[in-house]
Image 1 (tube, each protein chain N blue to C red):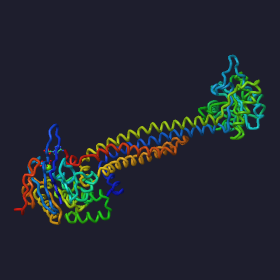
Image 2: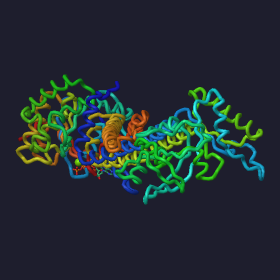
Image 3: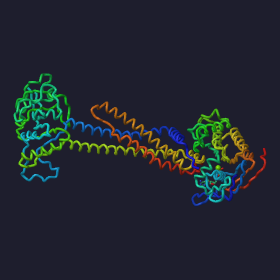
Image 4: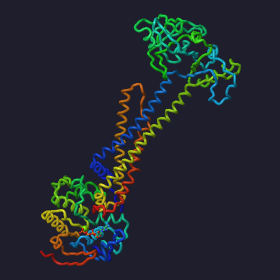
Length: 405
Length: 228
Ligand SMILES: Nc1ncnc2c1ncn2[C@@H]1O[C@H](COP(=O)(O)OP(=O)(O)OP(=O)(O)O)[C@@H](O)[C@H]1O
Ligand SMILES: [Mg+2]
């Protein structure tokens, strides 16, 4: 005849034991809930960082390829022979890419720092030489005035589109459109102001000036391009565009494969992987606090066992077999762990809510696996660390326990 | 029916062996009323623990209702304790966080009795102990006599055949002690086998059968009508 306590009785007995030692129970709940909350919150931050970067990349432009002069060594090709300096990447190279059907837009870029001045005010900013297509590729909007004219990219023009921050600094409350500014001793007429774009991957778009690429080549005195942005026609066209662009440049460079083409998607998936791994790592580190909470639970339950020796002796005298005493104490630790975990989840949800309110642009969100994993680990911890105290209780000698010796 | 034959219980204390019980043989018919007296350390509590299946003798035989108990697995001995034996302790040993009613119902909770049946039986016991108005009081809200009555209620709630009491009046004043003894005798009158360990000769004399222990042995075993 196996007699087993009814489950509701088991739970209510454990609950009352926990209620009987309120301070201890609350401290345990706190320890466990902090563990669970930190796992959920930290992974939420990691996931938020991942989403943020993915979002930033999307903002950078869709179906984007970036071409740089010089062969990247990371692909494992033979290093360039001594003296075989890569050829310049020229404007004509860039424009030749438009031959390819899978390529929608091309933006040749020359970038440098130069002083921009109006009257007595002067600012050193990033000056970008580009074409009209640069704006749609990078999803940049014009706040007022117009974009760069869509002329033959080989022809320079003395016009400039400036960021709103730069406009404020140079012109204050004065009207900027139509005014002439100096960039490195050359005069440019302000024809457009960028919309309040904010920041993109660390580049402050508010603080830059965009001039026609041919003019920039004159200002910076270089025939070579800094890079070429290539926008493929569609997602499926990215690979084809990449291959074709490489082929076109090789043809134009006497069979020399001397450019590097980065696909944004590859870059993105790399970041995605790194930040994903980071989230797991952070979650794992936070899980250590769960183990600490588990050890605390063990400690508290050991104290509880030694304080309740007489009660355990009594239970045995009343006919509770060892495994029943074992179960009673295990249920107590698991209940502690589970209640602590539930509290932790609440704290984490509240924390995420608050962070969202404070940083509305940061897409913080707990990954789907984090909450069940944290709660699961907490409960398993309670079970594992509850075994030792429960066994100690179950093995108590009732005569000894009741005599109080 | 309880039958002890040649029971030995030794404790090793350091290098020495203490013979807490030696060559104890005893036969108690159902419904008997026995008092156990003797000097401190004579083995009275040890005898009670052996009778209550809390302790295992080193040698000898203990048959409870014809079943040899000394070689039963712990699980079976727990089941026998649950269903056939009730304990009353000097220190009451009530669970402090449980009400009087819940303390009395505890053995049935451990035995997995359904709540309805439990409630009915606890009510019955509380009624017979005259404790209905204290049902929801916790032990610290009860007097010593009331606590011991609750403990007795807990001991009989499973309707055991044997009631073992180790100095049940040791922590009580004379009046409360008298009440408790009266209650135990009433239960014995209803058929339960009652074994009381006591230091109080007045209480010891009341039993139909009086056992005196010295140094782990039964020194005398008198039966006969209690004299007043
Ligand atoms: N767990 C133990 N370990 C060692 N010795 C023990 C143990 N339990 C009892 N003894 C010894 O066995 C002997 C009998 O003890 P027991 O408790 O049965 O005495 P008692 O007659 O109940 O005494 P009292 O009237 O003081 O309660 C004593 O000498 C005691 O020291
Ligand atoms: Mg004793």
